[in-house]
Image (cartoon, rainbow, N blue to C red; front, side):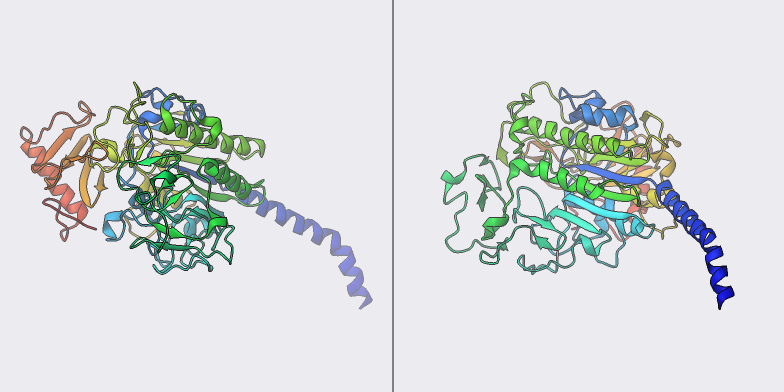
Length: 517
């Protein structure tokens, strides 16, 4: 016994040294994996980012990302609206394969099944702390959510360790924050109720009580419950202690994001930072009001740029910037009047949010899904410009490849080389979506099948890309899609139509008055 004790104490320094060595090794191994930060804007156009040289607004913090990273000129969301693009980004699946992947109400059931793996699930298996802060808009619960109880089927069930979200959009109820599974600040004595079918008895709306509209008035579609002087979509009652203030939303999201990142010293993090700017209603903090000269939309973009700057400064201060892969993009193209009278049209002046592209949000034309896309990672990405065809859909497989993980056969492609600037071509083809209709991108060509329906969405004054005959554009010589080649390039048209049908699948029609959703 005495010999054993002497041996233990003799070995103790060696054992401590080995333990210390193992700890240091594991710490270094963890830190060799990059932190991953996706900053996702809402309705931001290529022309809204000054690094693209298309508009009149100055976005110096986003420009810092571009100057120190890789700015893509040929990058796309999958869709021309928000929910489908977010679905694709997180799952690596084309949204049109899911009949429910369309713009959701604020009380919609969860769009993502817990059996469907997300980017957060993937990274969590590799030791990442995972978080989402900001706009969710992918549904919650089973469609019968009791907002006064812990909410199930939320981001915490989809690979995220931490979530601080709004359920849908700033123009939809419920206008409350949800932290993990609870509505933040909710009082038991004033329960929250939400409906998208009918109003609650005695509750005012924008139609019955227009005097309540003290900050913005509705132009179309936003005339139901009123909160903070702003009319919304949907009906809500109660929950007064939990209601957000639109003016401070940017500050709140930044604070929660920075708190999640913390010092980031012992474990790599993944943060999906889904900002709300410049989606309507545009109600930036007073310190940004009037600064752009373009009304609330321009001011909201300045606030968005400030949010990006706060993230960069924090990462720099904590010594994390060099080994953080930052991806900045938007969920779809821009729109000016999207439901409120806020001077977006009247004060846009010489600024071109669309960056010379045809269409915009809701459209099959390039302006619908072609978006700003910037990759910043000082340790691995050399500054420059990439013309590679890249889609947000490919982040799933590309991040898996970065961590040397295999993924099952899926729509997402391993485009890591393009993401890091090693491949100048990227994807060969891409299927794009807008309101259930599909378009096709292959090489330099954009192909839109014939569709029935209105060519113009009058409420927002945006061309939808819908014509009763096929459309073919050579984007090298005609990026604004003004010259339809369908009548003069029959062989190219037939080839693209055939290729698109193969990409979509034989069971799906790609022409006619289709509605996949």
